Image (cartoon, rainbow, N blue to C red; front, top):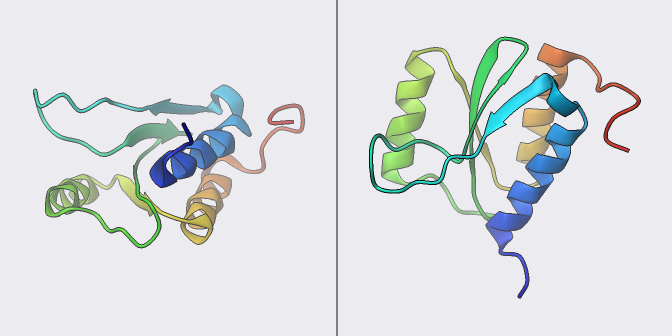
Length: 108
């Protein structure tokens, strides 16, 4: 069975993380219906907290996810929606701004 469109987006985010190795902490919570809802990926890069909601192309955040994004933004978290290559590049540019270029010995 093939990967879902959102699964491909998540795979691309994982590949991007691998360029920096363990310089990026990332957690991919599984929503269970217990506790507070959150977005797909929570992480920290050089002291900067971020969250990502991945979507298949042309899909947008649900109303609930948008509320969570707003709440995270109020606490100065950097929140990204990643649906396609262009949005992944926005996140990648942000990573470069907080981490610099990835080490040469990783991600190859």
